[in-house]
Figure 1 (cartoon, helix red, strand yellow):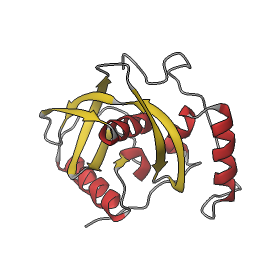
Figure 2: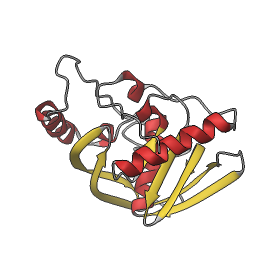
Figure 3: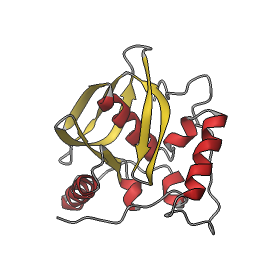
Figure 4: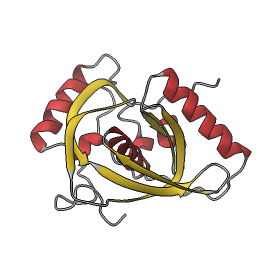
Length: 186
């Protein structure tokens, strides 16, 4: 078991879009193993490679007794149905805020051997897949909150014992625009 330190809010790697994986080799499988071990050690539902400081399009998940990973994900949404509920992040420990996400998602990508993989998710699995794919795009779930929600979140982050007040945080608006908060067409 190789548990790695998780990068926290304020670390620039969390705001940097990750590069596509091109080599499906033993190093990639080691990364997937480290992500899985770290996610499970912290009781997370998902963990993306940038959260370990690795700028590759890889994430792991553990939702409803389904443990897995996805590499180079591409999301599509079969309908317009939404869900709104509490969301947290291992890079923003201990804080949860209601976040709107799509209720259903289809994620296509690859496993660590380069074989095609598809995840059809609803509810918590859909939330997790969208959250982790956002990490790969340099987007945090805080970016999806309303202006008032982001203010509340920043106040809670500044009060958190893990927060480094010497590094000013960067909050940005979703790159998908207000008219398309879910990255349709990605």
